[in-house]
Length: 254
Image 1: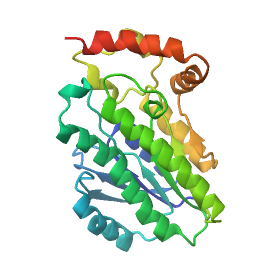
Image 2 (image 1 turned 90 degrees about the vertical axis):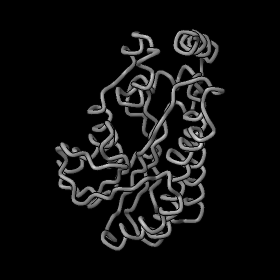
Image 3 (image 1 turned 120 degrees about the vertical axis):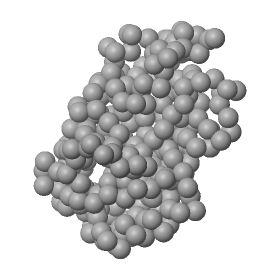
Image 4 (image 1 turned 135 degrees about the horizontal axis):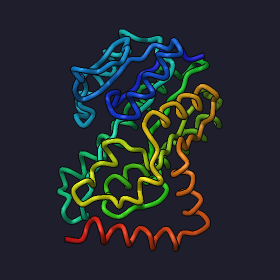
């Protein structure tokens, strides 16, 4: 039974909705984000301002969280960023920022909490990937690379912990098209209007993720668009690639 959850990216679309769903169930939520939203309506048990791209400060900050909340029994590594642009237009600093926030800080967090949860039961870690970790859309090379890394890391760790009889639940969350700020990175160039037919809302995604975690479902695709994309990638990759090529030309071509 989950009693207290730590969520990074708490003020993002899905993070915010997961928080609301947990607190509605009487589960305390400790939040992490780069800045504290001044007008938020979340019932946070506690909040920590952390820049997840600053690797040298993460140990001190996570130790601070643990010293105050050693009873956390679920961690959701949800924070993420993306840049929509051709690979050669993305600077090395921008690429590294995406990898640091989306993957490296997630690995650090996972390592920290696996050590604390090691001998406990009913503890879990959920890592936020994306359908971009299964398919490879154009224009988000760094984002797709980071999410492929999250998928591989999380699935491998889950198998490893089970083989070692370490009773930590490892959840992999792979949303498809959720109408969050990540989706809005293409507003100027414009993801095609037809994308709206595949998008889901953060509210629906948050509900689906929380329900799935509390049921113990380890692999979570919280939206129908994501499920369609995964099936297409398996059974009709050529059609998916044709669609990706069309979208890339429309969004990225100058």
